[in-house]
Image (cartoon, rainbow, N blue to C red; front, side, top):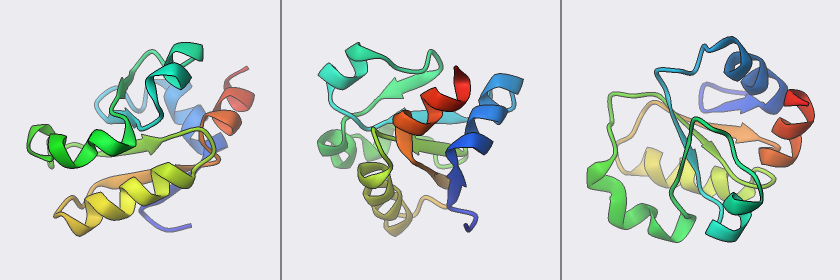
Length: 103
């Protein structure tokens, strides 16, 4: 664990408590995955569209990056860190784990 990653159970607890209401939750899955189920407070930004949306993202907000299992979100987290974003956090385990802890 480091400041750029969070376990799914810790993320789910913060989400339930409203601790993430001021954060930006970026779901980098594809639209069909999003339609199958997503977090109400999340924003859909498919992984392949992140580069073209960089200018629209707020570098001052903490961003939690989620995907299905934590692999794509890790790559997007690394990409954002490499492009000047400092408050970026990968949610390990992705929606598969998050949903388990929110159930």
